Image (cartoon, rainbow, N blue to C red; front, side):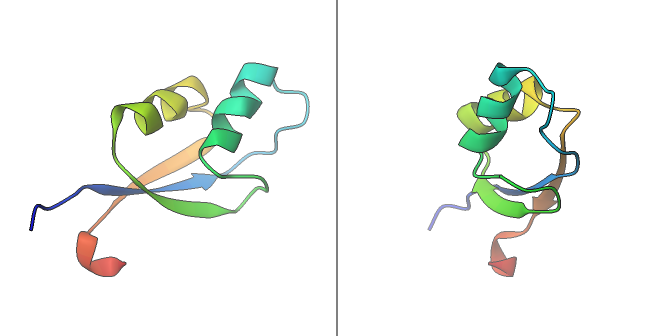
Length: 67
């Protein structure tokens, strides 16, 4: 089977007072509260949302065996 790349995205800052487009980008990653993490497939849509709100999230690469 093909190996897919996974990344762990963690919300490290609150969303209060942030621009609406940045809030929407974070919400589309499935994050709502600071400290919350999600493991997502590494694709252009996810990377674009991370790039838009890069100062709000922390990104780590995860091995496929960890899930």
